[in-house]
Length: 345
Image: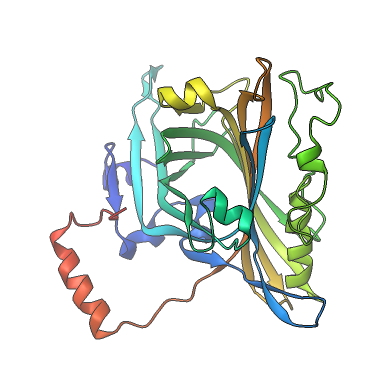
């Protein structure tokens, strides 16, 4: 480690792509590159095939009479920059030895676009091809003196939120396809119990907004998608990245601008990424994730705060590098005026 610190120094610095193999990104290394949504297909009642989204967003927001439940199919682009970041943190001196921490990480950029063309989606302002989410940030690999958390995610969202989530990585061989946790989109009281009012969650548990999507338990769609991709093949191995803003023995959290804090407070986030290598399937490598952000606000006309899970699930495949053309070479030359090695987010 001393040799690495001497090479890169203890301040924050950028590690260019050509030296990426010389640093330790740990479980993050497989993420490097650009990912896009897997587009599935479904057959309608007339036997006609049409695209089926592999990304889904479910969220409850203030509305009439109690709240409005929105289900939005989407596609996305998720890029983990080939320019890494390095940082060192000075620690205490104990018995004549200074304990320093070393961090390597990746910049990420996420853009999510609606694939919904229903009257409801259009009336709500998120019709087809509308950008419904954008996020930039860092995924960090903390290799030493990490308190048991070797992964950290720092993200910023234009709504006025900033997140710090800590977590752990794990490896699994031949995991099958039935490893997704059951999560629920139902609103609950602050103590986790179901609201006593009759029919409180009917918007969520009633008639599905999309017949092909289980809106109460979104993770079931991740499994069915994985089953479709794997087919008669198998998941040979996978890397799991589990992150949360809430830990009893560590810091982390979500910061909100005053308007959000006063109206629809984002209180916590839990996210799991599965990077899966597949043998004999339609894709050799996919990235799946499930993320839940708990929003707290009372139903319209009440004062009792309710936890409303905002859940996003998605399946992505690695984009193949595009061959350079005269146009890309020109754009590359124009970009030289930017700070060397710094992604233009």
